[in-house]
Image (cartoon, rainbow, N blue to C red; front, top):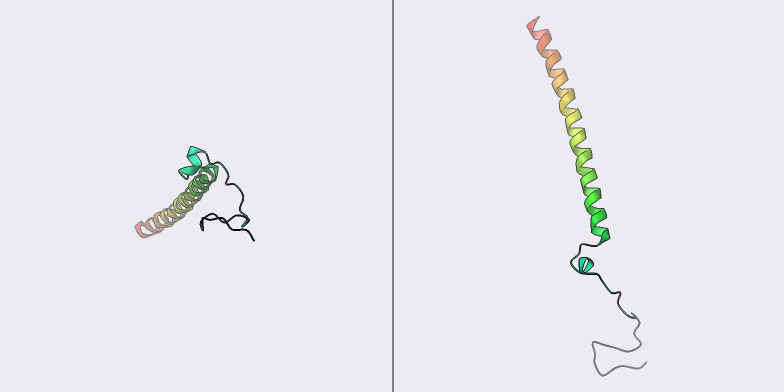
Length: 71
């Protein structure tokens, strides 16, 4: 095994060259982050839809109860 003089740069230890990152990727704004943001927005929209359905069902049940109480 050949070692370089610098302990932080051992020759022959694998790894190769690093991929060149774009500015956006260096700032953690790469395409993977855009996909994560879209997934989060979809989950939020689904949650809001479910909450509205549940609130609508509860409101409908409450109105039916009010009608019977008034009769």
